[in-house]
Image (cartoon, rainbow, N blue to C red; front, side, top):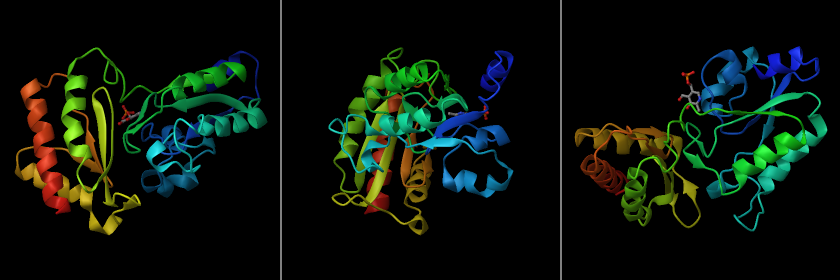
Length: 243
Ligand SMILES: Cc1ncc(COP(=O)(O)O)c(C=O)c1O
């Protein structure tokens, strides 16, 4: 639609898209073209159209080597550099607002989303907010249970092999690490996320990993009691798997 909009507006040059590293927008050729998760998307590269890329706002493992907030959102500056150079060719920027889900439940730092909005206005680029995962109040205050989840997750963040717990409303990710100090990740062959989820399954809980990240995205209709046992079983499973 963004492409079509510019074509009908007589701005024929705007045919390209800018997307983020770690992005996931679906499995059609168009959506994979603006994807940024190597393990999912690399295989399809001969079929895809090229899109411009900006860094993922992944503060725990910042590719720019910075820390929030002293970084002053350098990742946005990098996005702006691409826009400055190519805005005449860019139809739209596509993002997952507030949380990059499939990329590892990556929660944007405060000010990032607003910053993207401002840049799009400045450079006359459409902003496409893919809310497939984040919509219907999942990241917001529509349900008090987001606060309960937050309270419950605090207990997990102290575990020796839990590097980062990130959460926005009813979306959370627990990133497991081999070494908490150095953030050394578990190797893929160790299948740590998978092991945690297998143990959880034996205890009656179905959850999924994204590599070393345990995903928590419960149904919005979950009861408080169920939510507590969700976190409880996850905690026990992490303890058992990481020994
Ligand atoms: C952010 C995001 N966009 C798009 C999709 C894909 O949705 P669909 O399969 O309905 O195209 C997903 C699926 O998880 C998603 O998380």
